[in-house]
Amino acid sequence: MEMEEILSLLRRPRPLSPDERARHFQIEVQGWKNGDEVEIGGFFIARKPPYAPDDAAYYLLSPLPQGELKEWRKPKIYVVLKITESSRVDAVQSGTYVRVKGIADAYRWGTLRMLHVISMRKEEYSDYWKGFREYALTGEEIEELFSSTIEAPYDMMKGLVYSFLNAPTLIGSNLTWSEGTTFSTIKDGSEVYSAWEALKYIYSILPPEMRLRKERWGWTTDEFLDLDFRLRDPNEGTKYYVPSRKEMLVREIPAPSWARKYFIEKSATFLTPRAVLRANDGVARLSEVPFILSERIAYERNRELEQLAPNLIATLFVAEQRVPSLNLAELEGYRRRFETFLAKNRREYGEIFEAMKIRGMVFETGLRYQLGARLLGSMARFKGRLTRPLVSDVILVLQEILDLWVNELPERERATLLRTYRHYAGRDRRLSVALSIFTDIEATSSDGTVQRTEFLRALREYGFTERTAREIIEHFIAKGYLYEPIAGKLRLVR
Image 1 (tube, helix red, strand yellow):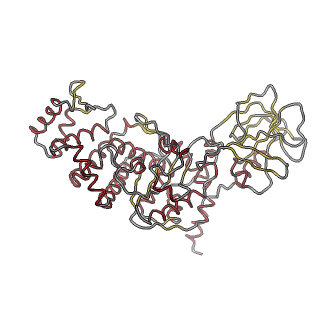
Image 2 (image 1 turned 180 degrees about the vertical axis):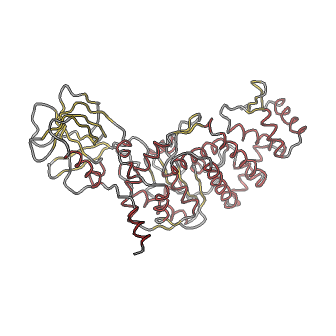
Image 3 (image 1 turned 60 degrees about the vertical axis):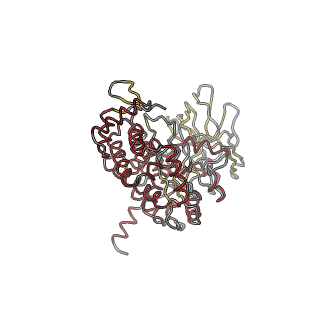
């Protein structure tokens, strides 16, 4: 074996398996001395341990959450919690992740350790994973894991990685979305089912708590303690969803009725192919990366990815902590580049691009601007921080997606789209282009107004003369399309 291969293996991250996490918990507990005041995190189990006395309430603390505890076949590890009237305890359900402070002691049965609880407070499921930040993967390691599992075009693969890391909250947005994203791969042919199979595999390796499910409670059994546990799913944050049946891929929202609110609110990450190719498809319209498939997707089982799935989850929550939000008002560089992107493609693609930008279509300007900002945030999480070159990367991805839509949209759909646009835009091509330029600028404005000078400059950059540009502005005001609430600022009349 070459020295480089040996060094590469040594650099591989250690899998954050259930065994590894239980071992961390056990080592910490074994280090306690009776009488020490200690603090530890774990998952609360509202069941009495064997031979519990009647002098207090006795419960258990587990190092693993509900889903993994159920699947773990080795002898379970617990700490006994003794709760009295003097204990300060948050109201929690069985299965919740908690931090417990107490006095260490031995338990009267077996080798179990016990805490005389001083306080117990509820914490987020994400806090559990953040405690393993040293196991988090780098962006390059994540990309390598995905690319060695799924054979797909490079930009589409990167889009999947970005989607997996979710999107920061957008401060200043008029949309109340959570951090979930939508990764859609679209083709009205057999190619889409190959993508669905690949994404189902990715979904299958996630911890049970990270999968979007209707049922929030589950049962598990400990044969050694002879106890049944009813535990609640501790994760109230972002989850992942892949359609369970291929018939769902043609639904307006490819999910059961109970899951639709998660899609609309982006409170879950939807990795969903679409067996539909329409410019007004609702999934494509709300997707940060609505890629059109140009070829079949292949995948193969990847043992390393399966082992490192918990590391991916730790990476996700650590990345969210690094880039928790983005302020739209502070993304001036992105706004300028986005407006340049619109102007470039208006010249290059003409009517078909204008048609894709109207309300309800895949490139609806205001919506795509904010989805692009979310993509920028996902990239920042991938890199660890927001940097200026990432804005260029976002524009490149948007351009790749647009090129695919312009070139792959079936002729029948293209004709329908153009008819819709011409009805919307009216007969005067010059005025419709000018109004489109205004709405593009307005869509990226933080307060919904457009500086008169900014609109004038954009019209001139498109090719209108100074005189014609001024006449168009006055025409829009006179006809009631625009009004001037403050001198020098224009707003669209809706």
